[in-house]
Image 1 (spheres, one colour):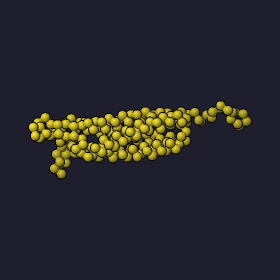
Image 2 (spheres, helix red, strand yellow; image 1 turned 30 degrees about the vertical axis):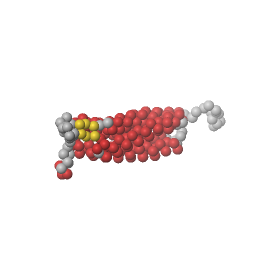
Image 3 (cartoon, helix red, strand yellow; image 1 turned 120 degrees about the horizontal axis):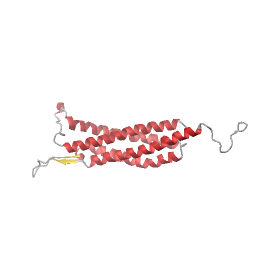
Image 4 (cartoon, one colour; image 1 turned 135 degrees about the vertical axis):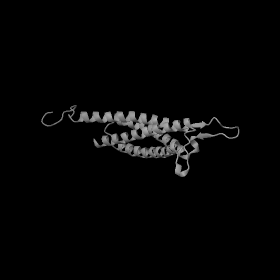
Amino acid sequence: MKGGAVEVGEISKGSIPRNGFKRGLSIVDFILRIVAAISTLGSALGMGTTRETLPFATRFVKFRAVFNDLPTFVFFVISNSIVCGYLVLSLVLSFFHIVKITAVKSRVLQVFLDTLMFGLLTTGASAAAAIVYVAHYGNPNANWFPFCRQYNRFCERISGSLVGSYIAVVLFIILILMSAISISRQ
């Protein structure tokens, strides 16, 4: 630096750590999106393929539990599938943020869409969690008996699907916070 002018090729001292921090956030964002996509895909597949028939079925009557007998579980599968599709598509934008760390408008769009998907995923997981709770513990006031005593495998799979979905919910919270931090550092 001569006489207050910056020469070509000279970088100010404050720009390197800031750009490195943003690039690091973008790389972590990309990785978390992959993990969240796998989590929502696993939840949707786990719930969508859940069924159990009790062994004491007769020739004319079969006692079975299938996920699509309950509309809440269908909504859970659909919401997880939509969010998984979004996460896979958002990987392109996330990769763009790794390459171009100064992009602001696309980050704001991504935060907006992440928030929408967070809401959809949370509503699907919460509704399914209410049904899973009743399946495990019943509700004596409404004369609903817990049916997980008979359908053990069914209940284990739907509970596992909920865990995967709530992992994705936590990852979305982290993703939204990281994007907000990255936008505020512009």
